[in-house]
Image (cartoon, rainbow, N blue to C red):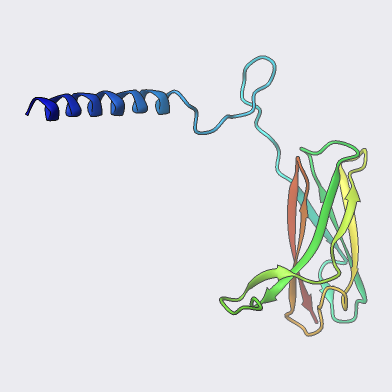
Length: 148
């Protein structure tokens, strides 16, 4: 009986210590400005030219404004379309082979990429692709749908 009481006492103390240590660790850190205020970032925006992309167009350009990026940052861009994974499963947006490109953010904090409609697999009216931009400091995405 005495051993079980000691074990229970030790177990409770260990649980209290673990709880105290885990509570002192932040689950997330909010970026702050030098004055200690939270640094609330701006959202990226995108545009397509021409808008809308029509079946008579042979190419389109997507431009992303990345306000949290820095001039010279490298941004990877790729087209995704709805596909079923090779091993089976649910249909989802997956990369289109050969569409990955690397862009460099300009002084205006913008990047632009041009794809042909064939390259992006926009063949029939209603086909769509997701153009995804991603880098260390910024990301954006734009859905492009082929129209009449």
